[in-house]
Image (cartoon, rainbow, N blue to C red; front, top):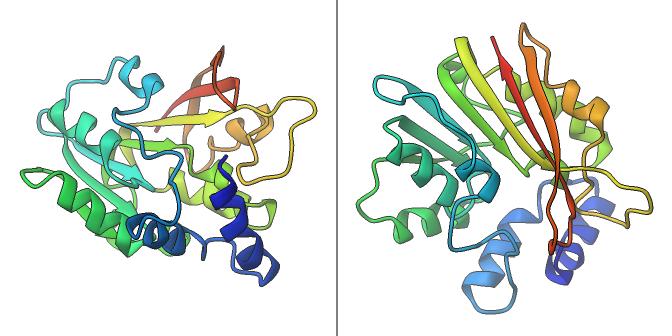
Amino acid sequence: MSGDVRRLAAGYLRDGDPTGWFEPLYAEAGAGGAAVPWDVPEASAHLRAYPLPPGEGRRALVVGCGPGRDAEHIAAAGYATTAFDISPTAIELARDRHRDTRVDYVVADLLNPPGEWRQAFDLVLESNNVQALPTSIRAAAIAAVGTFVAPGGTLLVLAAAAVAGGGDGPPWPLSRDEVEAFAGDGLTLVSVERTDASGSTLPSRWRAVLRR
């Protein structure tokens, strides 16, 4: 992860505000003073490689959408897509970049989401967000993600995998136990794959599929 992320996160983590650094990061990046390391030209390669179920007539939710690349990919597959981020600047950026979008971009907090989102989405994508959160709130975040999945729906979890000798975060890559912990609130773990991501600063990746 970039030095900008760790520089900004350090003070907020010290002050007991583990999610407060996201908005300053996007704001500084908008002013040219920082880089958002996950702001890349395409949707996640692991998302693009996943065979999405047919989207027509189904709803999708993208957790921590950032600039919106993953959300746009899912919407292009036919899903009525909602995407949220805790950072208002990130949501403004996503809307600005995708002027003709069908995605509903919303400012929201994973740890205090709208009540109407409970079990409301046929597809939920959690891609690389929980790994940016410290252990003090990680279990609560994992539990919250699963609550969005509708009966019969799918949760797709993409994350860096913890390896020996990992450094200080964020991010804090997920252990196998943490990936399996998404199987709460009536969700069943269908598959967990661990793959190499050669050339990446986070060289091992999880892709987990869960269903309600």
